[in-house]
Length: 321
Image (cartoon, rainbow, N blue to C red):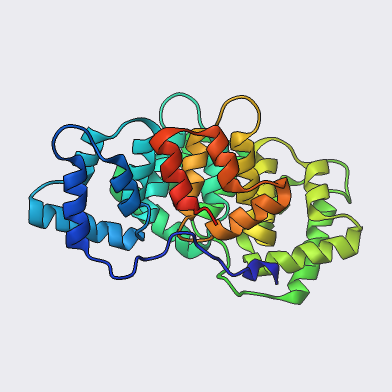
């Protein structure tokens, strides 16, 4: 099944790792007049998240200083966003991004979709627990206050972990679910949105892959074509994201990265979030997919859209290969 693509990260644990040596090298890079940004990039962009946590502990233990505070006082702008993002544990980083998407006036629905829809139940559980710990507020409650209608119901279902565990497959049920989707959309006047979001939020990714194949056999159209014809707005965007992640998650993220850099201006927040959050998961797959889809390398696209230390940090995470 295509969902079982083998994830290849671009950032892996450094060999011969010495947290104490790295902590002292970082202190040296920030001590005195001026900052050695390249040294910071060379260390923090080439260590796994677990190793970065160890460096922060060594920094505190041996130097009596808080690494995050020192980095904040020495760095600035988008370069600071990348480095501080790397210093957070993965689920804490995504929680911060979710909070940012809902905080203040207006809601960034596209970021909510990008963060929530690709997650498995285990990943969602870690995010939900971490969110409440960080913000003393349940994520589901915050989401409900910022979204509405079928879109809210879909996200809430994913957040409360109603998706079947990975590997849950029932081919006979898949035939029935494909028929339910057809009857709720193409097979009737109007659309029963509830059927769409219930099936796509409940079934495991493995199950959904079979459902989509059955749908094509039944209707002669792909599930993507059906969604486009029957739905719109945020619900359409969210369900499409789930469909893409079922079929090939790197394709979904490659598309998001391209959109972030296409046209006038750059959506730096999306660029940073995807590169930081996927670097230890499947950024190599995303790179390969990006090159295949757009006939240029991800690193060359990022180079043309960014500059300075910010550019160097992102390129270090992507890897030049």
